[in-house]
Length: 156
Image 1 (tube, rainbow, N blue to C red):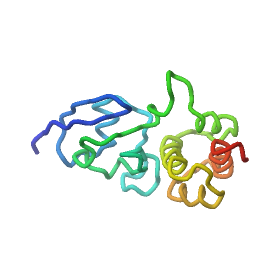
Image 2 (cartoon, rainbow, N blue to C red; image 1 turned 135 degrees about the horizontal axis):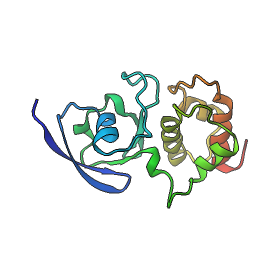
Image 3 (tube, rainbow, N blue to C red; image 1 turned 90 degrees about the vertical axis):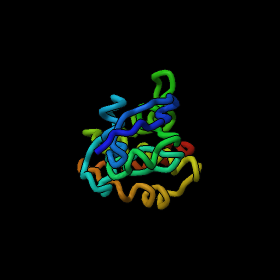
């Protein structure tokens, strides 16, 4: 395996990383970039814990090769806040007490961000559909849905 230099835009910052082209984006984000909030869950793109935004779309970073993310805008949960202050969606999650253990939340926040970008006033059904692939073992699903709806416009 030969390491290649990849140019990535992560949370608005240009980065160059050395990795094999098949290294997962998750591995690069956590280890080469030091962004630990994105979690490893199943390793097969099925649980949602590792989702990040790539050019605005929520994707599982565990099975996304780093090479496919070159020259694209990547946003992790660390990139959602501004100046260390939670954004509207994160504030809604706090207000609704939508997180318990928090392991799944970075991926859920990524998918909810993508949903609100394409559908600023989603219905409850649209929220549930957008988050359907995210597993939360704490059972906070209803609070998570309420938080997304609150962020969309105060509905909860």
